[in-house]
Length: 104
Image (tube, rainbow, N blue to C red; front, side, top):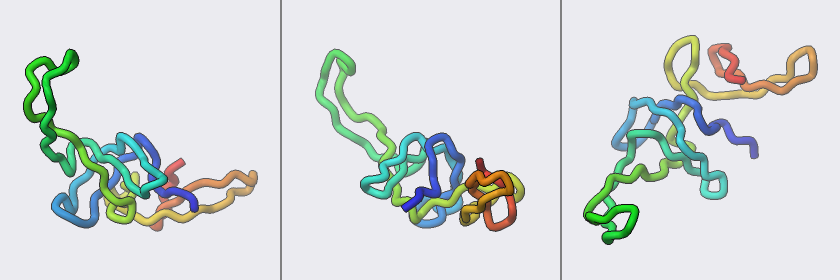
């Protein structure tokens, strides 16, 4: 199945505690159908002291969100929109939102 979300895209969260918020996709996990959005769904993780983190303690980590709970942000309306695929006259496949904005 083709993924409608790619790394680096700006997306709108449509469900959960952060509903309505927007953010940049840091990572896509296609095997789990999840994405990590910058600054959202943050959890505290307890870490032991190490060379990287000599103090130890609690750090904030962004947790994955299911792909069905995010929509790509349209460039025309600045809202989350569904994506469909079209083939242009030159035979190239491109992603188009429901309001007609081209994402690729």
